[in-house]
Length: 411
DNA sequence: AGGCCTTTGAAGGTG
DNA sequence: CACCTTCAAAGGCCT
Image 1 (cartoon, rainbow, N blue to C red):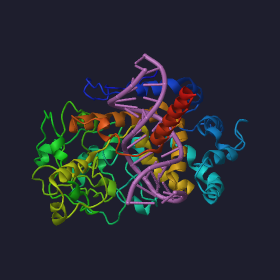
Image 2 (image 1 turned 120 degrees about the vertical axis):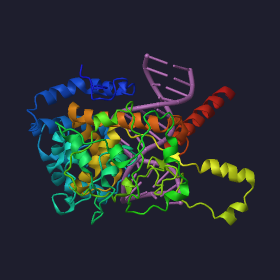
Image 3 (image 1 turned 180 degrees about the vertical axis):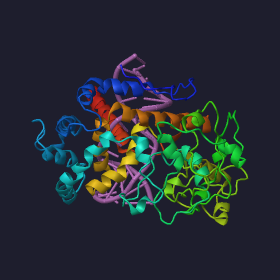
Image 4 (image 1 turned 30 degrees about the horizontal axis):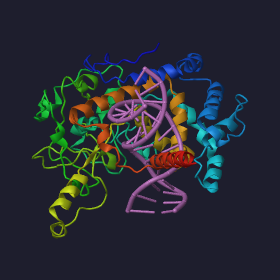
């Protein structure tokens, strides 16, 4: 049974956050994936075989989507088009047609991902990639909520990009290096940043009012290095040693909205919030004179309701989606997330275990750090903050069932 | 303006 | 323990 390196990567050994589900996920797909992947001679996988497997997957995943031509084995581009054309039910006919027309073109780059390394892909975000092979802005691999980015910002705080393309620091490149060179002196020591090694409660680092959220500039400069709780138990230092960029090498500065991280450190002049903390709504807060009209009880309740929301850490698939979304959009000229997510879901299944493992590992680190940053946080805290139709449907069905049973009772 | 769609995974709740 | 529900991201679409 394949197992992920739940702690061997330097997570401190005592990492209990290695999700058992990750292993289960591999178990579930294990045999099927073994067949297709073991036969793949390295990155140059047999496309026909993969396409065939994808078609089979799409039969199951797309449900009644009506994939044309599926189920008869590998037949070339038609199936690839079928995969892409599995659009959401609510997609407009025009969009579906566009998708179908774009399918072969989309498929041309579809299977490159199977040999993608998450970290290697990160290296494909050169400091000035905008002029190169990546005309489309590429999102970062790591979640915008990821405190991992704070580490990177420490290396990017001084430089200024000339465009809005999100940049990744050499730190990422170092992550991806199979033989990372010896890290230079501790960054925190270099920059005089205090990093508590024992940090039972780090939530204060990101305590920010919701009003400050809306005032964030799109280009963030760092008056001082953001604090980053880097503890040995967290294991980040071991996992991600500092890069070995040449002295004086200008680090690009992030301008992507998703990278507008901040320390929220008390007394920190930047006071830019961690992206995992978001205001409950995009609405601006009431002006003081408006608030004065409110009763104390109302304002108290409102205050409670307006508490910044700490979002869930992203799971492996979400991290994968964030990374690959722009690529799929560029390849398929799709914009509807529902359709893109369907494609990404199939690509996710087409990934090798090693490739998926990288995202699982990254997600595990996200959870680990999230837990350290917000010790008292629970996923339950965000329950009910989204109104979902499924729940309403469920309630409706329950109501219908109840009604039916009541009717029967009365009859 | 805000929910829906769509995906997988994590986590909490329930029986 | 198994199963169910909710949320995480994303952006066009729909009400």
